[in-house]
Length: 574
Image (cartoon, rainbow, N blue to C red; front, side, top):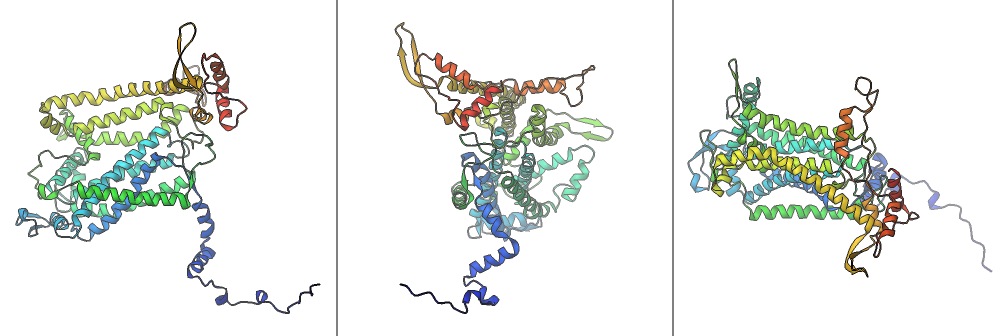
């Protein structure tokens, strides 16, 4: 038999310890514990690191923009060390022989020094320029994805406005950096902007003297643009990006329709370790691709243009692509001017160069609220739309893209004329018509295409997937057998919400009663929602299946779980 256990009078666990004895021997653990005791970081990190993000290739567009911005910050710090933002005139004595002894500004001379005398300078310059172009392009593509999928709807209207602000500032930042070298090409772009500023009625001349510190070009514009480029706009961009990402985390990420995905969950991978590893790897992919582009694709060879001279213009000069559409609008605008008193009102510059930009940005800012007013949809949206299921919005987006493309092509009307050996006037007259006709044509084609795709989805739901097998029955008729589609696919095809077309509730004088619907709003609702194809109910799908001559369509059992109940709920709305 075992002897009884003895009892100790004291125990190390019950003895008091000094702070030195309670401190962890591991310095990392000790530091983290110290921070957690005072800041409560462990709880925040635990929830943040397990944040789930959906996995879809289109979400990488926003990441490309973010990583391009990081590359811009890194390369920008390098360039800042050698660039001299001064318009003081000197005689160039650098290593580029063809420009030795040529008078130029210190800004242009330092750009040449970075390109030819600083080790790795030309590569970093080109990385910076390519990253800027990619940043704006990725931001635009990301905004288009958000627009076409309806990710701007409640509760993300504020984040959409932040995105619009980021896009506008990205263009300003790109133009400011593009103008810093003070070469002949960038100076031509500054001259173009000077014309836009002077075309603003009443205050244009004052604004020009305020910005340029006198008549164009003055001696202050490069130092001022330098401060804007390296301090003001980057600081605002960093703040807006932080707010943008914070709202993404707060509202949770949107996701595409699919089985198991609802308005109350997110299906994907956690931030740590899966998404963090993928995002880190993707950053180096973006950085590597930009570096390869900079190494093998020359961009902005300022030594070929020479220093800026207000009396000269580079032949065939073209701005960076994101500013080309404004120049195109100015190029094809008729010569409209008004003389009021002692002033000249240059509508041929103000309308296409200033007013058009204002119309674009106002439309982007207002659209989420306009669509909510038209549809009376005040519900929360975490499931994205398939573009085909909102044909009017998709058609408007494609029409806007087509109009943008026409203006962009107009910015190269001289290049088109010389390369294709056609008349410059003929190109200009054609583009004046195309900027109005092409968007209308694109709108109707896109809308009819979306409706056709909806009809194809409806047929796939009702009849199943074509099997490719042609069967001849005893009567001699040929039919194609259909194979049932999966329940997951059926769920994805029927997950979208169906919004009813608003009906007018007018009073005796034709106006809305209280919070009723006016006739104008009802007409807009019919225009926006009236073309949508109605989703079939589960009973309709069963009837179609029973009527099939061959092997049936997708079998949708009402006793099935989540995905099938959504089909029946959608059908009950009819």
